[in-house]
Length: 67
Image (cartoon, rainbow, N blue to C red; front, side, top):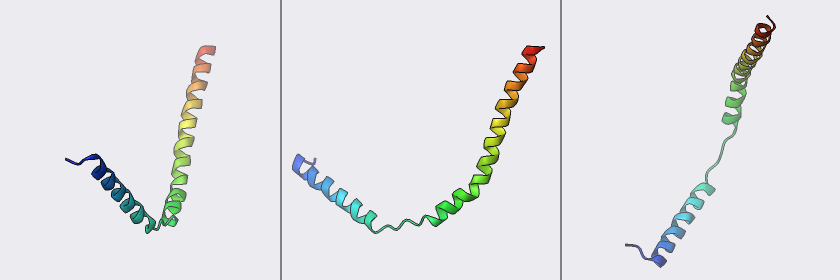
C-alpha cells in the first residue's frame, strides 16, 4: 500500500511525465481546417432542410387552423 508521501511523489512524477510528453507534441491544424471546410457544405444542407421542415410544419398548422 502506498503511504501519503510516496503517493505525492508518484503523482508528481506522473504529472511531470505528462507535461514533458505533451511539450514535444506538434499539432497540425491544416488537416482539421480542411475537414471542417469540406463538411461545411453538408452541414449547411442539413441545416436548411431542418429549417424548411420547421417552417413548413408551421405554415401547415396555420393553413389548417384557417380552414
